Amino acid sequence: MKKTLYKGELVIRQGDTKDKYLYVLEKGKLAVQRAVNGVIIDCGFLREGDVFGEISMIIGVERAATIMVASDEAIVNQLDRSGFLDLISRRPEIAWKVLTSLAVRTQALDEIQGQISDSKVLRKILLGKD
Image (cartoon, rainbow, N blue to C red; front, side, top):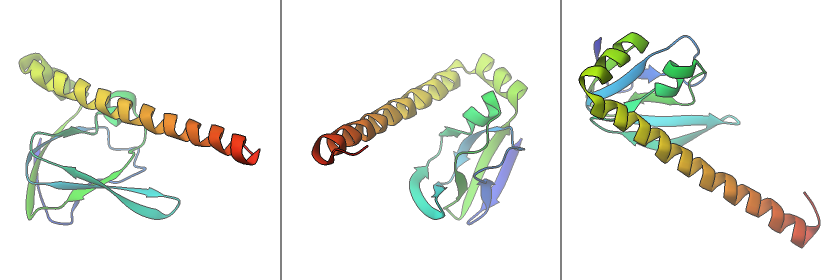
């Protein structure tokens, strides 16, 4: 289902568990924010052609970020699981785009985890603390 949204409107709210859709941004720009310990962190933007929300749609976990319209207008295609399966059967490049996005995010998280581990080791060596 295509939805037209306007500046400031929410597409996804962090923590939501009821929304089980994947989205394809067809037009516009969306802002991604996360609340961490009560602090709002701007994480970047989604642009036309970007796919998001796949993790919650696939495994049913809560939304990891809030996504809102940053441009004057945005059009998103909202797909449930069966709609997504139908789409990738017709357009396999969408499946590849989702897999690539997941791989890039996994790599980024691995790098962050490595930096955190390195910091803990260095702190233990220098300060004798965990």
